[in-house]
Amino acid sequence: MIDAGQALPQQPERAVLVGLAFGGLNRGAVEEHLDELARLLSTAGGAEAARFVQERLAPDPATLVGSGFAARVAEACERENAQMVVFDEDLTASQVRNLERVMPDDVKVLDRAAVILDIFALHARSRESQTQVELAQLTYLLPRLTRRWRHLSRQAGGIGTRGVGETQLEIDRRLISHRIAQLKRKLTEIEHGRRLRRHRRSGTPTVALVGYTNAGKSSLFRRLTGADVVVGDRLFATLDPRARQVGLGDGVTAVLTDTVGFIRKLPHHLVAPFRSTLGEAAEADLVLHVVDISHPGWEEQLEVSDEVLSELGVERERVLVVLNKIDLLRNGNGRQASPFTPGWPRVSALTGEGLHRLRELLRERLLSAPDVVTLRVPLTEAAAVERALGLPHVLARRFRPQFLDLAVRISSERLAAAGLADYRLAAWEAVVGAGS
Image (tube, rainbow, N blue to C red):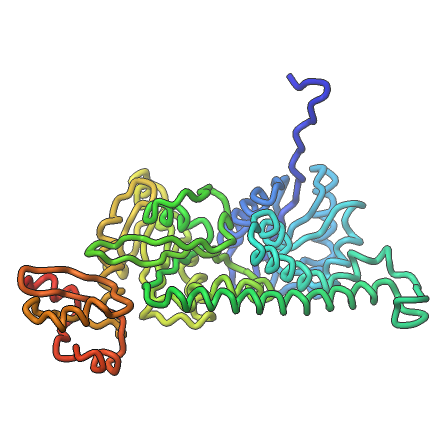
């Protein structure tokens, strides 16, 4: 029973979801996309009241779905007592305005991007992510001021305006444009500081965790590093990149970074503000692409993430795909990996299965990088041993009965200048496997 002075729990806003099947997309795929939209809505604090899927040859320029179908959606809003309609496609400002005329009073018309922005705003904690979110929101809002600010579209004049006759709407546009310019300058400064931090740790290998949202990146991050991070079964749980050291065996350590998740149909104007965060992936020595193998649509999610990585300029040679949540496959969930994935490690961040092999693979990949040199220095040559131990950026070191083995990030020129070029050997794993 609720006490008289206790606040009633806030009820989630009810929404009618609308999907569109066109361009060869079948209804089943649209339903799957709407399932994801429903999860996005739930993460943002809403609830699905009903859903509609329309099959048509091409979108309607005026309302996306046509006036007749829009009227059916409006009736459903009345019937289900819904407070908003959410479309799974991007809406233009004119489409939103036209749809709002059809919908009942006080029913909001949103698209997928608006819901994602709400989630971003909920999860932003650091100065950087809050700046990125505000920039994304204002960039999204600017062309839509005609509907959101129509009650302010009246003549205004006097001090502080461009002149007599300027509308309040034009003032709002100018103020938002000015704020966008300020935020872009602020993000440039933040990115400069991030670059300096990357440079300071340039001697330590870096591994960036990327993948579709809710693929289990944060769970894997916590399992590998032992960091106490929030892990939840929700979309976009991570907006602020987190970096921790992780031990990979043989004395090798790396900096592991967790990044914001990817998602299908994420408009470019939402991706752009987060490029400084995603820059961790673009500049990492190795990118660990986490895939939820238990998800029925894991192959499509893999393609979406691959497209974003390609846009960021991440070469395939730097990417290691890892299939996560293999524990769920034993329960009959999801679909098994295709035969073309035999080389991809399979792990469970929940149970820890496969993580030992994953650490080995990460170590092998990092130590076989083109700029990593393996040295074997006889312990009898004290001067050479002293020079080798004094090298910066030593990634791995092992003392043997007769030799010192080192894996060092160093150029051939600096190696020669240190007088150690003659001690260069094959890759670290080959040296370790061969023994002393």
